Length: 312
Image (tube, rainbow, N blue to C red; front, side, top):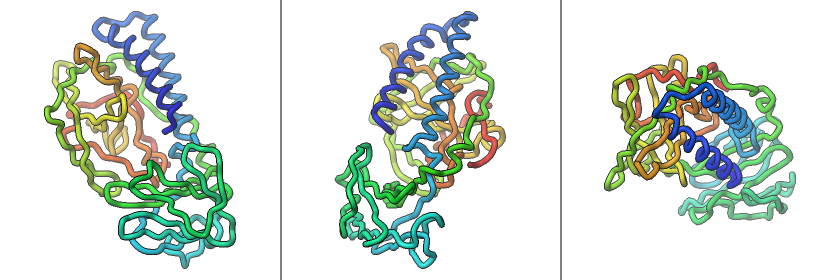
C-alpha cells in the first residue's frame, strides 16, 4: 500500500474516531447522523478506488507457487508456469536458490522491463537479475506491455503474483452491495492487552498457516451480550478478521475485515462495523486472504458492512 494512501486513511480514521468517541455514548443527533453518513459514503467510494488502483486487487491475473529450482514461464503450455494467453509464449525463467533467493533469467526477446516497487524509473532486464531475497522490502517488478509480475512470500511459500493493467474487471466493478448504514453498529470497545502478546495461528485461503502476535483483544457489548475479538497490529492501526452469523449466508464465507485506531488514553477503541469489508478473495481468485481465527467467530449477526453477492 502506498504511503500516501496510508496517511489519508489514518487521517480519516483519526477524524471520524474523534467524532465517534464523543458520539457513541449518547444518541446521535440528526445532524450527526447525516454527517456520519456523508463520511461513510466517501469511505465507500475510496474503497472501490483502492480495489481498482494499480496496487489493488481487481487487476490481479495470476498467482503461481514457486518451487525450488528453475521455472520457465509465459503463455505456452510447455512452461512450468503458464501465464494468460495474451502474454508472449516465453517470458523468461525464475530460479529459486537453496536460500530462497529468486533470480530472473531474461529472454533476448521479448524485452522485459524492470522496476522497483513504488518508483517510476525502469530499466531493461539484464540476462540475470536478483529479484527477491529476504533482505529486500519488496520484490523487483518485471513487466511486458500491460502485464507486471513479482515475487511474494506467504508463510514459507514463495509465489509469483501477476497483474494485468488492462483487465476487463476494472470496468465491471462499480459498487459493492452493503447493509444500510446503521450508527447502532458503531460501538465503543475496551482494549484488553495481552502481556506477553498472544501468538495467533492464522490460516489463509490457500491453507497456508503462519503465526502472528496479537497485542490484545477488543471487548464490547451488543444488546446486553459481551463479545471479544483478537486484533493484530498494522502500523498505527489494529486489524481485525471476524466472522459472525451472517457469514456464508448474506456475507462472504471467509469472514470480513476491519481496521480501527489504537486505544485512546482511556483504553477505548471505536469499532465501526459499517466499515466491515470483504476480503480481496471476493474480487479475485489470486489473493491470499487470512481467515478469522476460531475465537473471532461471533455468535451474533452483524447486520452492517459489506455483503457478498458473488465472486469476481
